[in-house]
Length: 70
Image 1 (tube, rainbow, N blue to C red):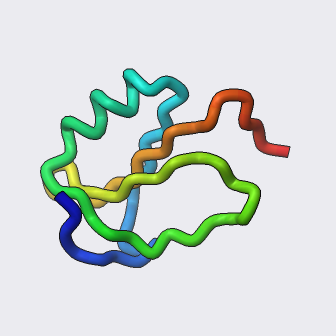
Image 2 (cartoon, rainbow, N blue to C red):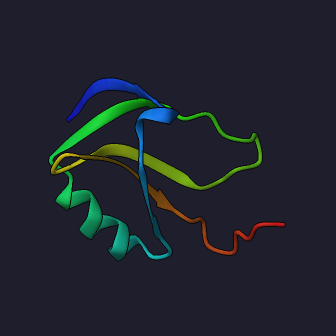
């Protein structure tokens, strides 16, 4: 399903999911999935999926269980 490649500055919205069921629901709502050059810290264990819902470019984040900022 992956299509165009986009940069970080081409995304306006992030949808943050704590549960796999939330991620699955949002993933199914994507009209298109993108390859994305997002970049992240080596210790970042979250999963990122880039795509489009309607006319909006979005990044869907699945937070790893037990992950916290800080």
